[in-house]
Image (tube, rainbow, N blue to C red; front, side, top):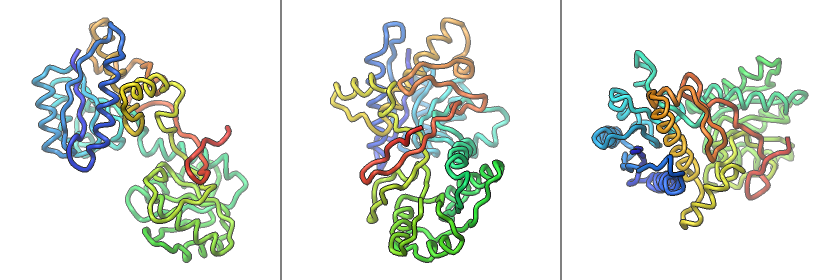
Length: 337
């Protein structure tokens, strides 16, 4: 069973690519005899040229399915070539449909372990609706495409539930002092704020609120998991995001296997492991049922170290893994449900 694994193994994203391929390799060494597989690992260079070259290598090697791709450029270049040979792709990182997918006459065979942005925003909005039922809140964004679209979609979801913000605002990102924004929030009477922005901005907003002696609860999405910058994130900051893969109870076998091999069980290591599990199960089921691998991905549930994984008709993971976390001064911890 030959399974393609595409990852950036050179350049600035090589560390992430190594995490992914570590997980894929360990998954094949711990697989059952009925799911034995050989991973064909290729550096996609996080570029369109690298993606096309990776696809050509996979086709020549006769792989049944491809996993990986952390960069949109590489996936977009590879997809048409792989689709022509009926080779599906399972990716852990790229959640939005690219230009090639949107222009395709028929859905391309790509399956994502993440949710689409509209479903992510719906999940965030649902949690905030329960949290803010009787609270005056604001929604702000940093003016970037991602930040603006996330803030808008969350606001729409909340308004569908009968909740309206006392303020919506776009702020200037990257400032050490967000006093002007905090002053606007205080005048509007907001005690809670959702930010469509980055970790450093959340830290700056909290610092300005503290300086003004203004109690303000800040909520962000998984962008708050970014590497800490010059400003310290305030304890009590809330985040709505999926749990980190290595913390899931189902991930314990993968974490143990990675550590036994002296490989770090973080970042894309556990998702890389899960993708190989999905790929092996899909190919095995396709051979048993004499059906295309693509059909198996469309219709079956897969038992993985991320838990049960099923894809919807659009190729996104079904279900809602999003949860509420609180920053305790050193890490985000789950809030009691």
